[in-house]
Length: 286
Image 1: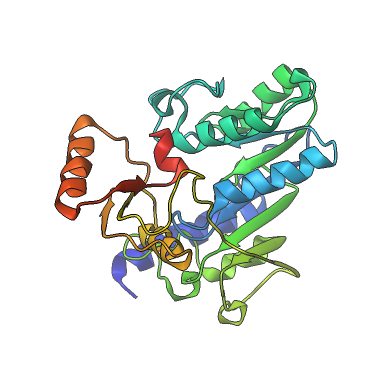
Image 2: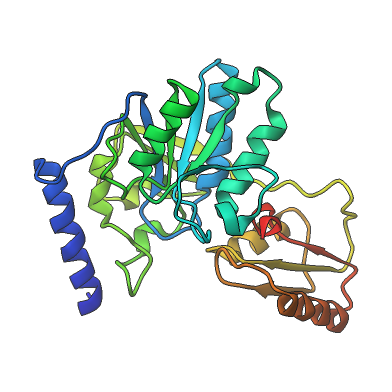
């Protein structure tokens, strides 16, 4: 093991041991908390899974909110995400979720799902309960956020998680053995669950898929670009659906696009003679 990964792993182990022993305190909200997280840095589909889970809760008449850190936003204040706002104010993924739930909600506005951003998600939860009343809390990217007690921990697994090493060399934020804390794992693609040393009793498999916009015509010369954690998975999904990009452009995860980036994409369109572009919904937020 790389010394840096070993040091990172030791720090994580000590922190988890302090929480497990009760020496580090966990704060509890009035409403139940369901955490949606992962072991690796990004790229496991937490946001679309939160959408699916939110739809199921809505179908069963369960009021809920989403508590998110709001990665990449310019403010640290606790706030309810305005669907008409921007990513610099709320973060791209919270904004995506707020737009999604607002677009699907047709009931009493007071009971509508809300997304709350705040660095301290316990305080964000207190704010939500005071502002919105009792409801379930979905803790976005919460597996490592142990300061907030949760009632159910869901961990999403990606295809190559079992082959990863600890940060900063690899992508693992915790060792695979941390899955002992999970109540359920969600495995997408052809994830080999036998490759993981431990697993919780509940194991759910889901199909990953993409939806092409209605205006897209198959066979067009297509430029694909994105700024997500695992861009190759997006490009592979496109090819799986019969879209073979003539060129691809990648940016870092949560990339905030600038006029210079748009100019770069335009140059790539011209050089590749692309007829159209495709990107992710998350990138559209930015």
